[in-house]
Amino acid sequence: MRTEARPATGDATIVQVVFKMAAPPDDPASDTLFYPTRKLRWSDFRGTPSMRGPSAAVAYTSFAYEGGSRLYKDTLRITLTLQVFFVRSASWVRAGNRDAYSLAHEQLHFDITCLVAQRFRQKIQALPLTRDDYDSRIQYEYLESFREMNRLQEAFDEETGHGAHAAVQRAWADRVARELKAAGMTP
Image (cartoon, rainbow, N blue to C red):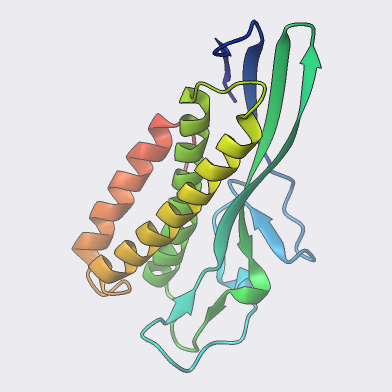
């Protein structure tokens, strides 16, 4: 993605952050589907349905990052790979609920996860990182973003009544699509 370079406070080291998006090809044998490989399909939901709770389906989505750093003369280059993923074995759908509208609801959960990952990327690129504290600051922002993801997922389900309120779901879909597009991602 975009590279940001800024002088570190207190020393002459320049810190560059480079983001990449992990998007390995879809492997049907794998338990993991990475965003934005393709849209979700009901065949991706391989877990055992829960008999409790209001959900007709659950999409287990999350995000992570991995990376490393390398010092070149006066420049610390940090390369981070974002992974936004869907876990097939932890995702499920109850019998009789495999319609396009419900699948769009579950896809929105995946899109919301990607949106939060992009917000995390933007936060990191705006931070005044230094050679001495970049790792702890990135980890802190990751944890904060993970909390944000959980809050947004809960708000989405609460406001849409787990998909029962179509107009509210459309508003969420529009907002998430706009924000993803602004972040350079295509939902």
